[in-house]
Length: 111
Image (cartoon, rainbow, N blue to C red; front, side, top):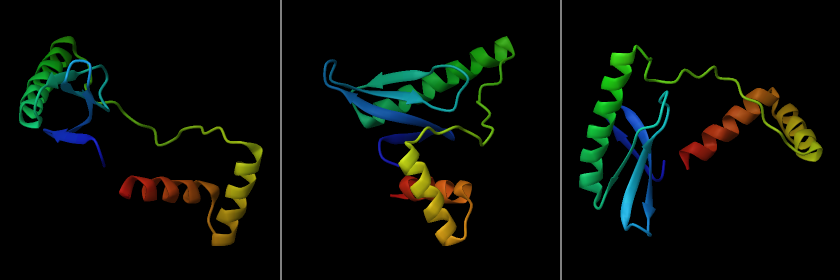
């Protein structure tokens, strides 16, 4: 996946901020915000480790589960035409709409 970094098993989205001429990382999948900044990729990884360590320590002190739980369910809003076309495409493949959408998402994540 582009623009991501895995630090100690946790994924962070990485962006470059031209206004401050630094990289910014933000962890995803946490029950709170943990972001970090640095001028190089190597320094960003080190800052990320420090930010994550602090976040996890605070969670432990406060008795908060640090990692978000996902149900595997979400609602998507589509145009009526796209919904119809997706149902037809799924049926043509002998799949449920859920299987069709899950495969489409998996395909996009692997490119």
